[in-house]
Image 1 (spheres, rainbow, N blue to C red):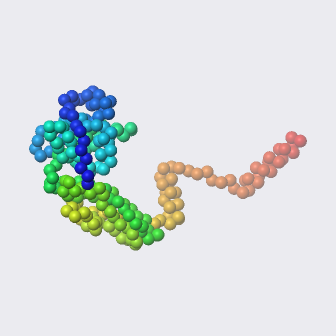
Image 2 (tube, rainbow, N blue to C red):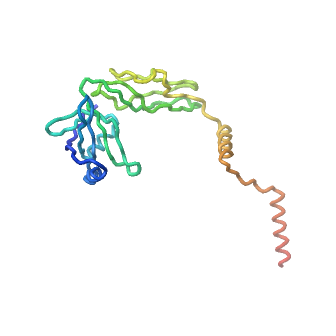
Image 3 (cartoon, helix red, strand yellow):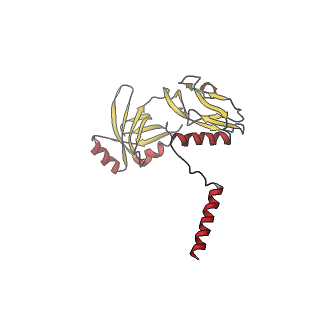
Length: 222
């Protein structure tokens, strides 16, 4: 993983008002902490930080001029509607140090045609060197049959990485794909539970009767 250097400024203003002013200047309030040191409050350039955080486990060198800190993102707060960065917590790490992080899983390949592939977990927690965090871990489902499962212990981890979860954690479950009849039955059951009713089609005789009445009415009017 590449080490991204981001220039930073020491932050001396706090509170919601100060945070809004910082964001108006296209900057993001952040806190650096770890290794028993006092928290370091900084502001970071918004656009640069946003690009760096496209990888959730990015390795960031925060450059304060007089000192530099090697960090990884610990908590990222975004606006729930607009998605812009509101605040970032960064964990200070040391080269050669082991950290526990959640790494995205990338599912590749295809199971047999009659199978339904259910992804039970999209990330996996691993312990890894802070400077060698993988961007993703690949999970191949190529040719898997119905009934097959992929567990955490089946994953091929990068060298130097170890699982930080139960080795029997279910990652992929391959089941039989439902038939059209089963899908219709499940839909009907869901609609019944939701109280959804469908109008019954008019009986054939009833339709003809309506037609005869209409014709009789026309005849009388003539």
